[in-house]
Figure 1 (cartoon, rainbow, N blue to C red):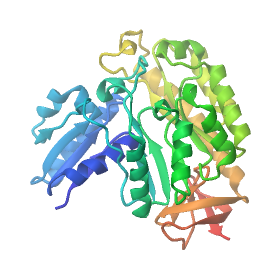
Figure 2: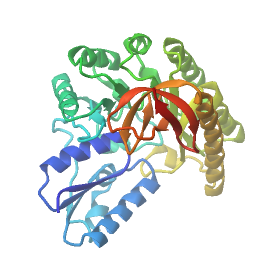
Figure 3: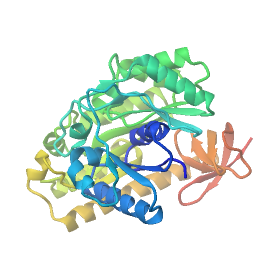
Figure 4: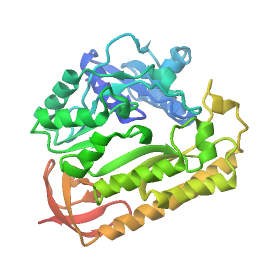
Length: 377
């Protein structure tokens, strides 16, 4: 039995799991947990129990954000052999998602913001920018190991010291072999001018952003303690699309936040069109322990569920129209595995008889419910 990992949550967790695997003894299963919602914590516990049932002789190590917030609860699980919590004083490590065509490299961890719904700042500590040399070397290792695309990831990557745009400039300048770079979730208030300039003039930076918007109503945004307004979010998207025609936009959105009125919920629905969002991650609000939002007047669970479903349905309709519009066009594509990959704008695609790691221009001939279909020129 080799070292295995079961990873829940964000791409930073996936990158960190690879570093943990490299240091673990044979026979270990690392369960890297997520705490973004109550459901994520439940899924973590479920994954631990399943791992024990399927591999009774393994040594199970529980770590990650849910464990950091409540280590005693995981120590109490009979399936867990070891609980590992982070030492915030220890240096962060730039880790890559090894042996993947699209690899995730951590550039930052922690968060200095205090959104009222979030516990991640408690689990991860203050924002820490990883040393540039460590990030550069990690990216180079991933490329040497066969990665064709690098995704820079972290808890709040726009908070890196010196600015995210400058970091991207340095990496692209120092590593000419880096031909495809993507960015994980961005805080709309921290997108800097150098980054906008890169989107305008650097084809190696892929034309897709995922924004941490969370809501489309100004009052709810204030109660979330977000640092942007609806108008500012829309203005940023307009600037990004002006800089890079064809750029696609994804976003995180929370449905059913405490005190959310029907009018406020409609403002989130209309934000999908206002920002041209084609990849929405919709989260039904989940009150997390020791957060201000958990003490606010709550909506009923059925109403939260209904609003999340409505928002997802509208997002699905917008995404479907976006995929339809690409049929008949020519798109640059990277094939990642099993004849599947993504276009530069991050539309999933299937290309029959394609090879892992293959890149090039594809003619889009049709689509399924979830993927474009195409053929290489």
